[in-house]
Length: 613
Image (cartoon, rainbow, N blue to C red):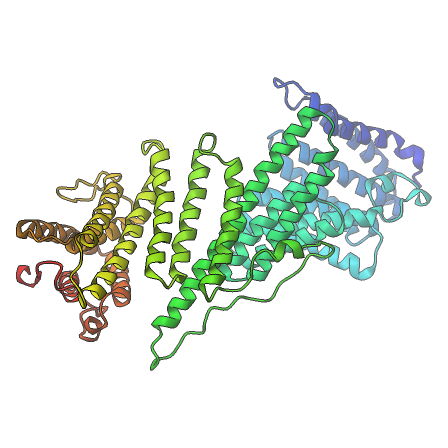
């Protein structure tokens, strides 16, 4: 028996009616019956299924007509499964497996190509949603293989409309376009699965291929595409793929400008236009923050790179220097040069290089603050201000003049102080903790600069009371912020006993704060011997509690290693050469190391600890 147009007309009417219910009528479903149209569509498709089964029984299973009917049958089963899943009912996967088994006999045939890939894609999504990522990948890999085979054999896939019509009615090219669209979805889902499997490199690669294909086949929504490109840049620049990251950010910005010109400007309805303008401002602010993070990374990585050069031992083996990765994949047809030329894709070597990067990032953050204001988005506004503070802090590294270094660090402090003044610590405790800790570090860095200047001054003249007061002021500000950080964890300042509720991941900054406070008390300059002794006792208290906490077997290896590394960078080289900072010191020995090193570093600034040990 052959099938003709009349045999399939009733089935086609049911199929089209069901899709009208899903695509159009469902928009008007009342809140009390959110799935009403979907239920109706499923009933219509189930009626169509009965007709398809009756038709299939009259056909020779090996005939061309039977292949067409099986493909129609599988398509309807797939749609019923999608509806079942959408209305949050079980059995969707069972229906998909039934459709997959039905179509297996027609694997590789032109009528079956698209529906076969669509079924495998849906099974991959379902397994991914239940955290069966390895099984999801198996289905998606099968879909990818079917596509590759079809392209290699130059097959002409069909759409559902083609299956309902005669050979003469087949719309040339539409089946192939659907094949490409289905394959793009396969790659998109594979990118997600690779991410869940912690294969980030393949996840990023498939994300980029997906973006390229969406551009090539003009199957994208401006805002989603731009956000995906900007998000992908966050994978590349931490790995120093600076050119690739910059290209993605440029493409993201370009696409948002296209959205403004091609979508927003063409909307005449005032309410709809206002909504789209709000989306534009919102997403441009997010992309601006991604640009700023890119610039921050360049400054931070450049600082690390130059620090390694300074600290390398001429006699020992040298690590290869950090270098930007030049390998990249470009989007075709996008004019991105005006966006890319705004900022470098190289590491910074001089202050002038770093200043250009810093100013570019600062301009992006200022744009982001136009949307994220402290009145409407206090949390996000504070995070932006934190990034501004980080820009000034990193730029100070490249400044050779110590006075200008302090000015840049002071600007960083001003930004962090604004956060503390703006936020209520009760409701924004996490951000305030970060600000207090960073303030403590920044004031301490300013103190180091002033102490260095004081040492240079003492060789020629007596320091002024103003200079000494400045040092004590910086000590006090740093101590107070570190103490606020500690008290936010309910750490009593009289005993410094850490509450049992503090989690392991929070221990490191807390112990660093204890260490810094101990060091800062020893730096206070005073002619009053009683006050000197009091400061020494406070220093002993904080250093002692730091050492007690380091005895925790989980923390001991980490902090012995960290203190040894930081001490080698900041303490006098003669101390290192004498063996004070060996990595094998035990906690009591470590305390003795800290005291002895402090005394040798600044012998005129306090009482020697050696008599107290």
